[in-house]
Image (cartoon, rainbow, N blue to C red; front, side, top):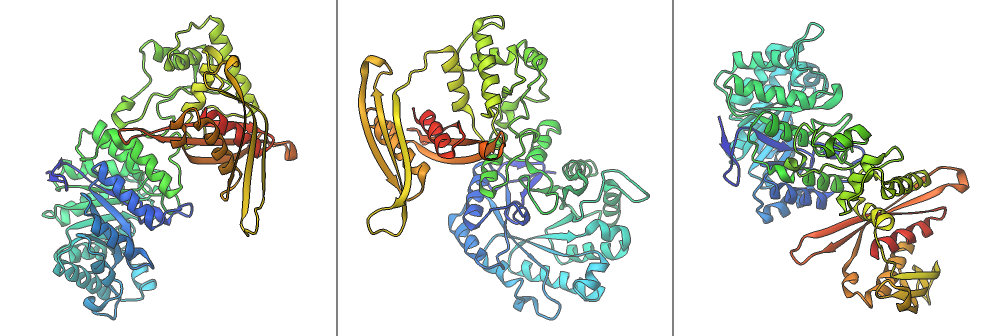
Length: 548
């Protein structure tokens, strides 16, 4: 069975992105209303069909939904809430009203399935809970909404009070719910039977037996047992193999409460590349999408995340790198299919094969036994020992640093300015209350990079946004006189960190990422590292490298 997305694509599985709500419950999350809007835009670009954007009931979040409504994105935005309260009419319930006010075509509500929660948390009778489910769904359907009903603690209910859990499902179906989503809220279910209790397939057998005509089941997993992503794939296969209609899978971008939710980027990649099922998602944009969402949530994609992680297709072992260069791949899929790349891991363990591969990446043909190879290895080892961390941390783009490493060792990298003195200070200026950072640079500048062309220079710049900002401004001001396009460079990321920790003698590492918008509206990005015992000096080194 298949369906069509908002853009008319035929799909075999419905993908439901829940970072905007479930992922935001992660204590590490920095996601705000603006970030939710940006995530929605990114998902729409990559043809993800559903996005659960949050609770319109919460303070300020209704504004997000109103803004998304105005944008008319080719994306099914979902407002999330719960069933009505026990002593109110659905039409007057304070929990349901915001779902209508959000003006989304689809709403998701959760309700209780496990009797201990019905009786001890909601403090209602089992019959009252069924009425709450029925009335809530019926009301939302009367308002023309697509209803996605989440059965909270579904598997605990099916295990401990099976008939009542089945009654909850049947009530939701009879009330007109479009989707019935099985929530492994505790994250405790395994794909197979274990310790005398059913695995996921065993529970699905019960649904197949009791609801043979229903065709819209979904799965919402948590990673507490480390198998939510695997369970999502098992669920899809079971639904399709048993003719149970169109499956829906929920997940987030490496975030969520406790251990997080099922990892949606991996689910999408496995469905498409391993199971040959169509999700409608633009697969080649998957890696970029995952990392863009991570920037908005403040929760990094793990470097070793399958498919979309920075080192998902990277090898450090010399034999692996050597084999790759000879066409004997260690890759289970072509990384280009998901928009990733076959990276070269650079560390103090890097050998000759890594040096050859890195040189080739930037246009230099060297042999393992040449001086160039040995020089490159020696430079890498020296920089790693110092604390540069050339492979980069999570979320760091080290292209600029790698390019400079190769050029300075093997090529003819030209230096355009030579500073005799640089000074950065902070203080008040005139009568202003705000502190201002000021940077002064004195030295020589060369338009061609040749000593014969050097000219004296002296530039000063100040900024209310701190020392790094004033340094960046003065460097761009000076270099921009000769190269006007330099003025368009933006500093898009700055991340200082202590390395080689030795108390007051520790070394500071400053990662700086730069961006330059090209004529085709694409943005070129590169990152470099500065290193010094003083953070200001480390930042200054990185700014010089990044701009010139």
